[in-house]
Each structure stands twice: as C-alpha cells, then as structure tokens.
Image (cartoon, rainbow, N blue to C red; front, side):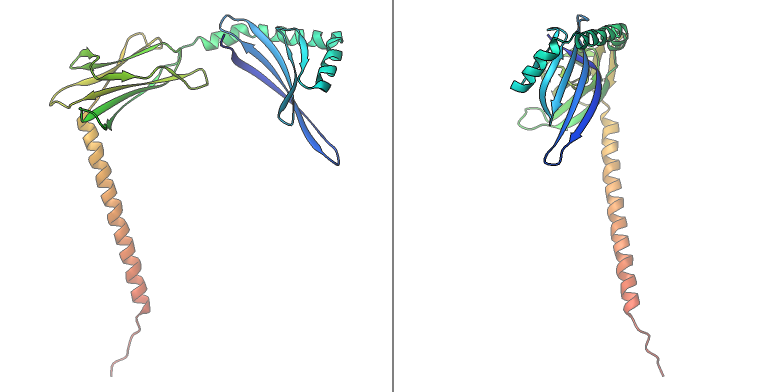
Amino acid sequence: MRVHRFLSLLVVSVAFSRANAFFGYVVLQCLYTPTEDVVYMEKLYINKLLMAQYNSTLGNYTGYTEKMKEIADEVNKIKKFKEQAKKNWNKCKSNIPLVFDELTKPVEPTVKLRLVETADSRHPSMLVCSAYGFYPKLIRVSWLRDGKETTTDVTSTDELSNGNWLYQIHSYLEFTPKPGEKISCRVEHTSSMEPKLYDWEPILEAERNKFAVGTAGLLLGLLFLVAGLIFYKKNSAGRMLVPTS
C-alpha cells in the first residue's frame, strides 16, 4: 500500500557535553493513504540514527536499542504520552478534507516536442514528445501523421514518478522525413477537456538552427575583433616617436 507524506512538523533539541557532542531531533508526521486512512508517527533521531518511534497503528512507542527499548516500555505505561499522541492523530484526521481536496486537483502537463539524431536505426530522424509535471498518473501520448494515428516505429516510457506527486512520460517516433508531411503529438489527460495537439514544425526548427549558427558566427567575429583591437593597442603603446631633422 502506497503511503503519501503530506504533513511533517520538526522539533529540534540540541545538547552538548565537554567530552562528546550529540544532536537529537524529533519528527512528527501525518501520513495519508489513498483510502483516506491516517497514520500518526513520532520519530526520535540521535546523530541521524532512528532510536525510537511512536506509530498510531500500533498505539505505542518502540525502541530500537536496548536502552531505548527500556525507555519505550516505561513511556508506554504513562497515560499522558498516549493521550497526547491520540490528540495529534485527531489533528491529522481533521486535515483530511484539505489534503485530499488539494491532491485530487489535476495538474496539466508541460509538453515539449523536439527532434533528435538516431543511431543504429533504419530511420534518419526521431521525434521525442515529452510530457512533464502532470497529475494524476493516467495519460495517453500518441502520434498523428497527416491527421491519422500511427503506431509504427513508436515507443514510449511508462509514467515516471518525479517523487513529488507529479509524473513525466516520453514517447518516441522514428521516421523518414517526407516533403509536406504533418506530424503531431497528441496528449490526452484529465486536466484538459479534450486532447491537445502539438505540431512539429521543421521549417521553424531549421530557422532556429540557422539562427544558432549565425549567432555563433557573429560571436566568433566579435571575438576576433576584440582580440585585434587589444593587439593593435599594445603595439601602438610600445612604439616611440623618433624626431627627424
């Protein structure tokens, strides 16, 4: 069962001694599941090691070292600690409407269409249609050639998790360019009422490439010009005027 972490409160306490120093902190967490169950947890770390924790599913504290096991057994006997943990669990539950209302909102993907070179392929060109940062996970990316869907020479990745509730996917079309052919990437996602088409425009891409080459040439020319001016000034400064009779 996948567990989503939504709320994390951090409380830090630090203690020092002359001989040694240690760093301890407690993390309080509300963990929400897709079935709207809530798990409240308290975790005690010392020098980055998990020493003990409270889990509302178990309803008690658990120690992970011999000393911490003894301390946890004693804490479990104190009614006030469990009462406070239960209050915190109830606070987590009170946030369920806010959490799931926010998480159920669809996020529209950002789509990029680009041409890349292919290696060891019978086709000289390959288009990549990438959809980034969408939610929920379900999405369909397909290719159209002159308005008709094609599945020939098409491969796609699975939906890849970004680790922050959002996903990305990449679809590849290998092809041999034909004059006048229109190629589009179609993206269907719940964030949009209808499929969205993203057309590949080879003329604009060629113009961008020419612009890039032209810009590189201009920069190279400026570089030579600046170098020439510096060289001229150095030579001019080194010259001495010789009087003539």
